[in-house]
Length: 333
Image (cartoon, rainbow, N blue to C red):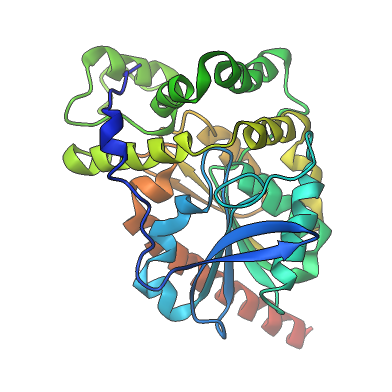
């Protein structure tokens, strides 16, 4: 696959400046200081963004800074323990429940009504576990690029899951970030080689002559690469090892049966981390809507924020419509 090159000095220019209307705050939970980001209208429905393994709350900045979302919703994103400015906790082998209970305590200090959980990657698994544990506190689930977990996976898949920790511990953060970046973002459609194009077709079972249409090009692609790489280089090795353990020992199916509210599952067409067929299978089992984002990879909320935010607004409208129909059916029963 493509080998992305970068100049480390370029990264100093990417500071994750907070968009207009977004504020950072810190909350003490059981003696642990957790950092988060907040935007929007506090008297409006609350959307809680739960990041995945490869980035903290900054992975949601392009959603938190969206004026349309700010105008109609209360937006929250946490840094899980050990991510961003949040202190690392004592759990070396945290379960999904450990994350859920900490997230619950964090949210109790911020909102007093049910919330919509928007998860990404591991964050989707945590969102499912949260909804299973506190179903009355969740009004909707949006699972993007969901991590299924390796607890019931075969030996080969578990070996793949262990590679992250091995690479990080063996080669260091810089080498790991550079290598993992190749899997987190699709190639630049202006410069992809014939060899890489052929590799993508094989990986995604596409005909040899099938056109490949990647969303990002030129400077937009370069900026996205730097943004994602900056997040990778900010990772805390201990926190990352903890979330790796969580993924190795959890299965999203464990939590699927306990929440019956409105749910959607979204996937990136060329996601090399959370494969689209796994997301589709999860959507079928949830009896939920499924959305495939064309031309993007794992971090498609960063790769194509315009479409992501548009569809997020549509998700809220779909959820409200589904709830209205359900109320009418109950009234007529």
